[in-house]
Image (cartoon, rainbow, N blue to C red; front, side, top):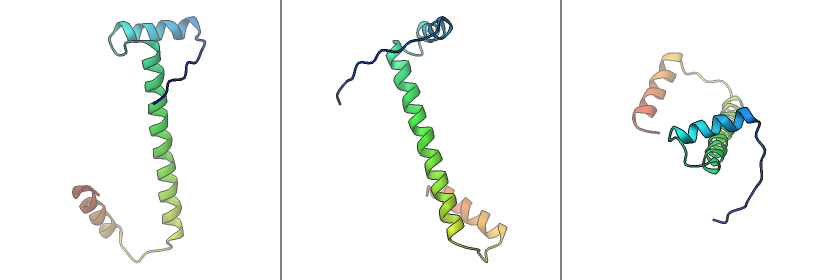
Length: 83
C-alpha cells in the first residue's frame, strides 16, 4: 500500500489533545491517531450504509404474517448461530 504525505493544521487545543494521547501511550505519533480516526469513520459509515440497505430491503419485502414473538425467536436463533 502506497503512502501519501498530507499536511494538516490543528488548533493549539487540538494539538495539545493529540500530544496528550501520544504521551499516554494510546498512539505513537500524530499520523497514527489520524489514521485511526479515518478507519473508525470508515467503519461507522459502512455500518450506516448496511443499516440503510437492510431497512430498504425490509420495507420492500412487504408485510409479514409473523408475530413479534416469532420474529424475536428467529433473531435470537440467528444471533446464537452467528449469522
